Amino acid sequence: MSFVVIGLNHATAPLDLLEQVTVAPDDLPKALHDLSQRPYVSEAVLLSTCNRTEIYVEAERFHGAFQDVRDFLSQSSFVAPERLGDVLYTYYDDEAVEHLFRVSAGVDSAVVGEHEILGQVKRAWQVAQEQACVGSSLNTVFRSALEVGKRVRTDTDISRHVASVSQAAIVLADAHAPLAGLSALLIGAGEMGSGMALSLAERDLASITVMSRTTGTADDLAERIGAQVRPIDELLDALVACDLAFTSTAAPSLVVEAGALEQVMDRRNGRPLLIVDVAMPRDIDPAAAALDGLHLCDLDAVGAFVAEGLESRSAELEQATGIIDDEVARYAERVGQQSVAPLITEFRAEAERLRSEELARQNAKLENLTDEQRQAVDEITRAVLNKFLHEPTVRLKESATSLRGERLASALRELFDLD
Image (cartoon, rainbow, N blue to C red; front, top):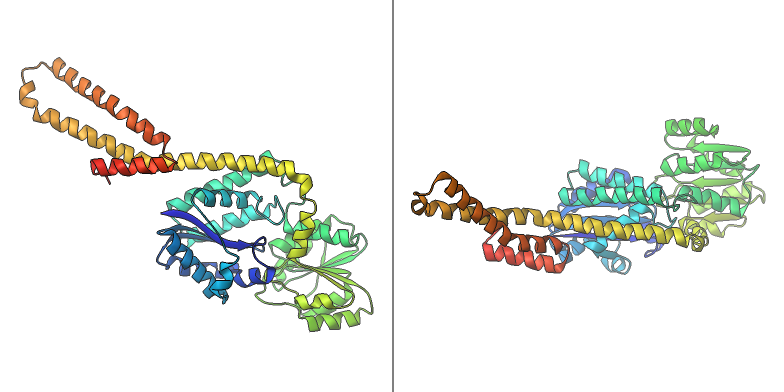
């Protein structure tokens, strides 16, 4: 059995391909059920965010599991396996653990140190638990990953700058044109929209308007930040009226086509419009970027903007990476020792069984001994056995996390016919 992660993210795949393989939250149960039926997948967690789609599995066979996951991604996204093969990355065992720890810590994110990913990892794991798609193996590694993510954020300053996609979107907009005195339109009131709303509320804007297909969610968010609400069917009118717009809906396809935005720009009479689209898949037709007066920023633009300031945070990254390396080593040692503990227990129990049976077989030869002498024989044979077993036990524990440990464990099972 191997722990394997297979996926693609902002660093390996273009945005249009990431859009195609994204799995919406409502579709996770069905997707997990599909994965769990694959022949080489024993356990599975599916993590799909605006910057990545990754599948973590406990694999019966590595190559078989890779093909199972690749086929799942291809079939669910209608993307040819050959195209996926060029962008998929694969890690297994210790490398897979390290990758998950880096993801949970925000080190592998487009916005380094982002705090949103920790909650996304937790929710992905929880959904897999609800669907009975995880067991002891993935539960152990995901529990550790969340602890590592929290430790990195507590012990370093990595999350004390621009620490989320939503926050980065606002900073990017402010760099494009100072937000003070402008009117902002917020399309989408989910987690990402809420994050942008809270950041906008800290700016000296003239007004903020919230729009969402879920009116109750829009009302709650608007009340929190002192904004106004408009119905979603007035979206084009709202785009005509605002100075800039931020969009982050969970719609499965485009919310605004390029043709509709061309009409919007005509009605604005030359007034420029900035739209920051951080939805996945995108809300705004990418073709609209060619329209005069419209400046369209998507997740790639947000990532590029954040990357410009990454060099100044090298010390924080180095510290975070050091913590992750330490935690990976600790995890490997802990899991390795746990994996050999049942074998050691069985080995020692088998040796004790043989000692006890031999004493019983020699009982006739010991019948003339006093109780004290019998106890002495029992203690002596037990002490000799413990001394004999001590060195193999220590060697097996010390080597538990290495290939040598696997060979020793295999030899022990073979030599003593253990399970």
